[in-house]
Length: 409
Ligand code: 5CA
Ligand code: ZN
View (tube, rainbow, N blue to C red):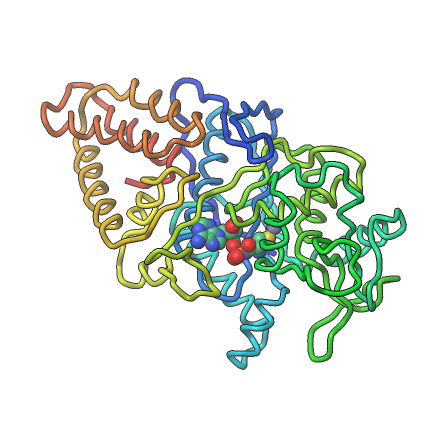
């Protein structure tokens, strides 16, 4: 499917820095050394409701990854999926009495608009689960033929025992895995499974639900984890630089995906870093479509909130921390945006050279966007207090804030 338009990324003077980022699999910081083309896969939305602040925060984190790499003059091969067929989408369509394809199309269109408004750079490949099915079926057949998958009442399951590295992404114990599996789309209590954690690869057609030709698997639809593996391997291949998503995806989604890929290719790891963004909450609970405690990007835009302020709200929190959306965090961002805009509206100001380096340094250090914002705050305060004589410095600041933070002043 098509993605959304890219906003311009201004080139900056000086040299970009290599990214050091927290990898869930090793539990520490890794310095990534991508080739001339950095490769990143970010798990996309399940389009049954509008983009909320949690989604926006997660995509903001990976947009920063892309911007840091672009600043090092690399190209970025960014792939994102859309889970445009899955249980929650089908359930919502039934609940609301709407066609599931229309619901998916409508919410995906809204997501594109939100991403455009927030100046998130688009993926090079934006791929729906449905369009990936012809590539998914042969992978599931291969897993089955290799003994890494088995059939249960017509459904096909992956056998976690097939991967010697299973557990290597999330490092959870079996009890924690079982709990999370039940919470996040798995079926650990289904009788007949070899291991309660085994995830479904291909679900045989159910009465009243959409299904596709599955070759020797029979008609059905794909499981969730194999969707992302098929799309990532097709477009990026093994050993890409970053797999990203919110921290709720570490287990089971990224754990299972890593196992599928290992069983398919015999190679390890699928991604050099598994990067997870913290959860954004509201009123003490994780913001989630199923709980309904949501602040939508599109709602704020309708209310006339400047998308640059929404983006500054996201940037004011470190991507790995869990945080709460409040009206105050948005008010703070609006005030900051005003200060910054006033500071860059003059033709001259304090030198911006050190500031560009501080933003670069902050982002290269595990995407420390709060530190980057503080650096810009300091420059803006200096501009306000004593000004400066550096002609063009405000322009440099505008371009740096745009290129590195995605905020148009
Ligand atoms: N389609 C799958 C991924 S393949 C999915 O998880 N879709 S989603 O719509 O539920 O979430 C989209 C992205 O937003 C995921 O990376 C998810 O981890 C992230 N996300 C969901 N809720 C939150 C939240 N409250 N805070 C931060 N990120 C969130
Ligand atoms: Zn995914």
